[in-house]
Amino acid sequence: MTKISVNGIDINYQEEGAGFPVILIHGLSDDSTLWAPLMPEFSRHYWAIALDVRGHGHSGKPDMPYSIQLFSEDLLGFLKKLEIPQAHLLGLSMGGAVAQQFALDHPEKIRSLILLSTFSYNDSDLRDTFKMLRKSLVRGGFSAFFDEAVKLVVTPEFASANADAIAEMKEESVRINSPTAILHAIDACMDFDVKDRMSQISHPTLIISGRKDVLTSPHLGEQIHRSIKGSEWKIMEGVGHNLLIPEKTSELARIILEFLGCH
Image (cartoon, rainbow, N blue to C red; front, side, top):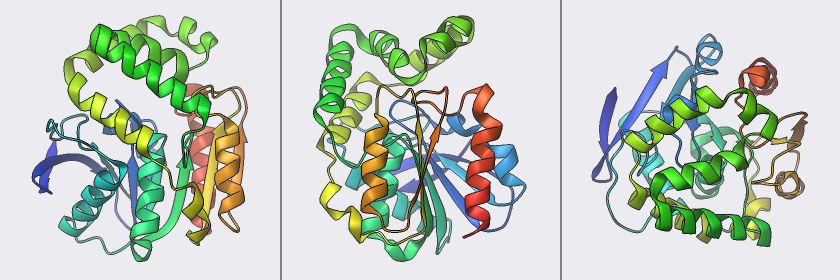
């Protein structure tokens, strides 16, 4: 584990490879280990850096209001500490929201943007989903939250075929996560809305949605695509919210690396 102090907290991160930096930002209740399937492939071509967002993984988890804006400012401080003047930014779900916020606030720091299974605002379905997840966390702790979340991020077929692996993941997630911090992160996601500012983003942008995503419906990816001039939008078949499942890792890596190779 490598940690640096940013904005009054320790930020934990993992890095592999060398060259131009690609910053990887995970989703709600995940951590930097989410990117383990992609790190070896990315690190062959780039300096791949995956961090634990405030309130997640082995980074600091202060009991205070969180916001996507705060996560974006943490990222700015993180890049400054690592003396990175510019990077490709890759975010999944909540991490994609952070990437969008950062692109709007600090456009000079980004070369390109890759947004996976994400949103620029809460439509009524997403807001209801966040409310449900929040309620499960308050009533039943992280264990109950995990049980509800897993139904949203992988397909039923994947869940039944990988029950043992998911059970192990749940045990580790319960051990590492702070219910209070995750509650603050849910609130940050619910407050996020940059829908009307998205057309200001002019970076080369790749948006990827899972056809079976029931958490961030593909139409939310389409909205981002329509808002960012010249952006690319890909839909991956046979996969839900979590695009980093073993059966899809090589396809996902190929799509992203082809995009990065052009920018």
